[in-house]
Length: 438
Image (cartoon, rainbow, N blue to C red; front, side):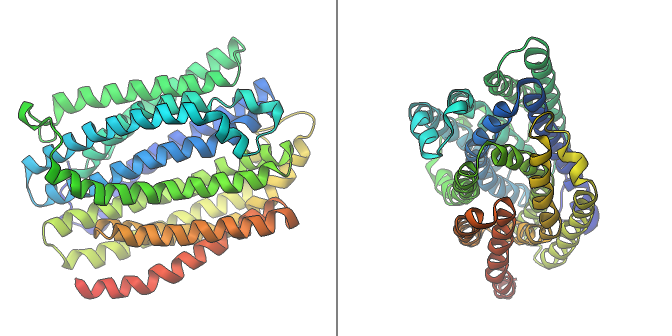
């Protein structure tokens, strides 16, 4: 556990963020390997099918993680205030309510899968191999892992979730190599192995918490949904879940624009989004560190530390952008060549390289927006984060609808930059207004 209400600011944020960054890199590396396996062992249609399923999968995962992030803020506040009973009861309420919600969502998603695929204008050649139904069935396992990881992170332990994530990613990759690369099963098998790995990581997290972290484990009388806690969890978690879901909804809309450009563009976009993820997701991890830091200090009443910690967090965000932006700009063609081979590969690499050349510069913008989002979540201002995200996602999707048919894949990059700039125009001035409350 890590008490962030005292001690060095940079040390807390850096040491908390590094395991999250490593975990995200590991997960993203697996996602990239998964696409490489699909593209090389099965073919371009399989890579395109993964690209179609990706935004829908992200919608499910981010909606779940949004609820867990909101609950995690409340748990961080309880930990900072040294209210152990409230910490345990918040986790119990989150697990019970979230499990029921995810099971209902899984059933609904499976029933609506054909409609979802038709709404996305999925080409007939890949309609039956996307594996979206299996993704929905795995939602409860994804929730349990994320909820338990949120509990551990709320008390400052970001290292243990990394270990479970590493196990899950390695298991997933090994199963893919054996079943797809070795035995020749189809791309739907990839979704099955993902669900198996998520279930294993959720089980490991539950066993570890029961044995090693009694401060988080609810007692027999605490395993119930408390209405007085469910209200704040829903206020924090539901708004955060909606906010987390807005981004993948935007990606689904953008994916529809990309689908209209043909299978080659779909394959290129799937490849470049894997690279995008190496920039965006770790920036969100730094934002998570900012959120936990601010929430703990807010719960403890340490308001003097909040502004200074946020400034340090923004510097970490921009430092990461310098690293990833430079690597993307220098290595983009070599990275893209890993994803495709054979006929049509040169066209896919050319399309993706132009896109990534623009995005390498634009990655600075989400570094800043994620930092501000982390600040507002830690302060409990979930509505502010939702407004900013809706502005960014809505205008990004609208700009993509205008630019993609005219300039192709690079238009998506400029649409992203436009949305992030509008988001900063809203969040930066409001930050100074918020600081008046400190």
